[in-house]
Amino acid sequence: MSNAQIIDMSKLPAPAVVVVPELETILSALKADLVAAMPAEARSAVSDTLALESEPLTKWLERLAYQLVVERSDRNDSAHAVMLAYARGSDLDQLGAFFGVVRLVIVPAQPAAIPPVAAVYEDDDTFRARIQLAPRGYSVAGPVGAYVFHAKTADGQVLDAAATSPTPGRVVVSVLSRVGSGVPSQALLNAVSAAVNADDIRPLTDEVIVQAATIVNYQIAAKIYTLPGPDSSSVLTTAQQRVIAYAESMHRIGRRPTLSGIYAALHIEGVDRVELTSPTADVVVGETQASWCTAINVTHGGIVG
Image (cartoon, rainbow, N blue to C red; front, side, top):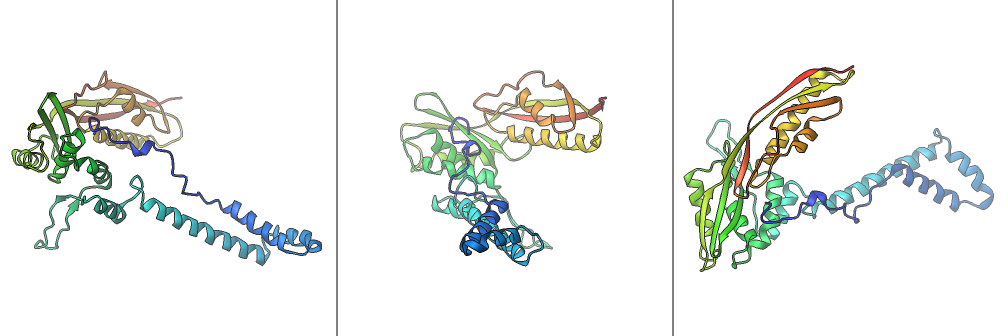
């Protein structure tokens, strides 16, 4: 959430605790240690022997080096598992539990169906963002982050939420749904309103109004020209997938799709140039609005050269 100012963890430097293993470096160190352990008069001969790929001892050291790489990779995974920026799946569930946050149900299970249908839960990235906001939810002084956290936790159908204060003592919580363009149902608005107006959440002096986020519609229309060599249809398909993913990532309150972002999504390997006809400027999105791409049309303009 832009107005809650959460940290973009994708921009944080890689953690220093994680050591990237290099097979050749480990193998060279193992060979050097073995040579150093030999009597001085035998070191040259042992070094020459270890330089032979067919030498059984060399093969054994290569296998040992590989095992050490695997072991260090496992350590890397273990370190990542306890970091909010990297944790996935059940590891992320455990981190969420530490903050009292559980993964929300998006689509309830249907155990009576034939065959039974499992529940669909919120994805890792959405869950991670709520965990980030969780400490702000502890406050009952009415900070922006607290309202956003409780609004997003009210129901699994809430895709995004924003809190603004147009006048002192008046808080407006805007809600974006996961369904269609994002316009929430009245039932969803009622659920969010009940959550943010609870006695142990809303300050006594705040008037909290819950509303639907205003949807700003736009379309993407572009023509790409490809270079000789790569299969044009594959390049076109990949470009379409990337621009769809970009539009979906911008479907949040306060995020504005930009021309540079669309160009970046389309200008992939194998593309010579992109002609973008729509939109003609950055999509203007306010702090209570969310963009919705109603159509995406990417065509092939031809092969250059």
